[in-house]
Length: 154
Length: 314
Figure 1 (cartoon, rainbow over the protein chains, first blue to last red):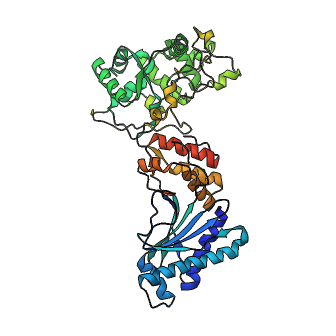
Figure 2 (cartoon, rainbow over the protein chains, first blue to last red; figure 1 turned 120 degrees about the vertical axis):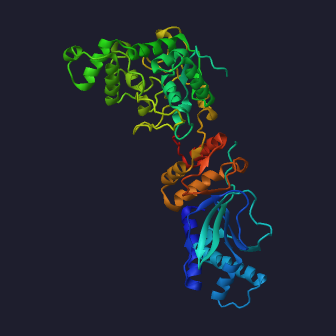
Figure 3 (cartoon, one colour; figure 1 turned 180 degrees about the horizontal axis):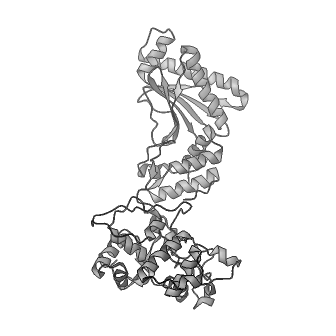
């Protein structure tokens, strides 16, 4: 993934919020985080492949996800429903990405997890993460690039 | 290492990183100024008006902080250093002439001016500051230089000795109290390091000046191999990350592209090193983030070079 592709993904996610809820999210300054990813209550992962494979994920707190469901007109807001909704959001973003990039950019089916479940990404990979501010809630938009280059010897 | 006041001590490359730390007494910094690798510690006190015991204690503190060290030198190094030392201890007539040159007064008129030795020294130092001599030592006389325009003349410039920041060279009166003080000097604009540049080529320790590969006015006893090792020059409070991050971002073209470049650099850094150094998160706008592990810092610099093609100038 290059910076252009990352920018497209970020824009697709922002567009989703804007069009679905009429409230645009604000992204904070990016940070690089090491160790186990800092995930919130529910997270949707999108895997992409190509010259620089990796994952994009969007993580929600439970209140943020419930507010989002309310905005989407969904009355049922139990854990299962929230998790499905997070997976659905990731799926929409994935579809839009496929449409944008065409066949040159392969994107896998998204995976949604709740806090505490096994992560679909390798352990110990640094994450490039933005804080998302949306309707007084904080979420996380992250990217993890695969180990296409070996680490240096210390 | 035991301190022997009868040995000459010289400033180490660690002097390049003094800033807010360490805190030392006023006369400790005075003694540090005098540690040129030539004068024995025991003779420093007389020129500063402090006792030998005080110098000894100061040297012990400076040694403890790694700011000075006693180091034997070769004859070639001695010869070059002595040339500079002769200039530093030039005769009164030479001092008058140098002052006159700096202030624009003809040497004839200047020689007729009767001033005390103390006044003369003060005015000479002021004059030397005017002409912005980059080190504590004045340049050697013309006879000891390669001719002007000689290729070596420029390459050797600035290699006289380990220079201290300009303000540290002033002979300010001692403060009224003997409490630890923070060093007040700030390097002059353009002076980014007090560390002597490394010689361009390995130095063969030949006997005498002709046998030395060192250029005639490369007087410093250049820091030996230990200067190349990270721990000897690594600042106590670590290396700030923000300048490095900014350099990578700029090199990559700024914006998201630059930020991703920083991320790709850190992808190359072993996670165990980061974990061991307690680095959990790196905000790309954090002004205070610092790497305190020299090995980790070196690894980051190598990754920067490899991934971003940036040779970061520390």
